[in-house]
Length: 222
Image (cartoon, rainbow, N blue to C red; front, side, top):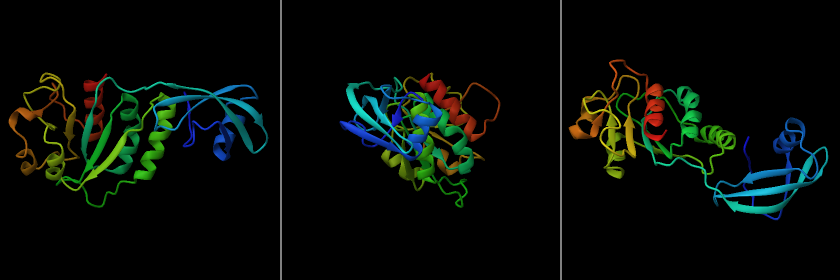
């Protein structure tokens, strides 16, 4: 873990209790005078604290310095992801966060199962743990769109990942891309995109949605 998240990081003094105390005291086995790095994931700063006291229930910290240290991908990538099984989303969203995806907008596409519901609080907890491990200084943004048409109204520059002779990465910078759910896009959805805005991978293999989203992120960001 490269830093510890605390919503009040930047204050002159902090007290850690509960899970934060257990992590510092029992897992990392820190002691008095050790330094800890904290972020609040809002100000872009990395805050260095010193442990000034530890007891069985709390850890007292004192701020030593704060420095600007943004850790993020060199490129911006916004993924419009047609909703799939939330369990499959949870399995790969950590990898997407580590690769630096800036934002994911979940879309109820025509072939998305309407019974699938996104638990944003659960995903944000997963992303928080991932950010602490990877050092990412800003949380991935998560949004929802009711359908593909409304998403395109807000993001008219979007590309679509589908079977195409236009290969991903060959058309220059792509900062917003839509990825389908299991079963792919409905023909009405494909018709929303001009031919030159539909791109694909250089492979005859059919990728699952969660495989495709990871492949896109690695191709465009790493």
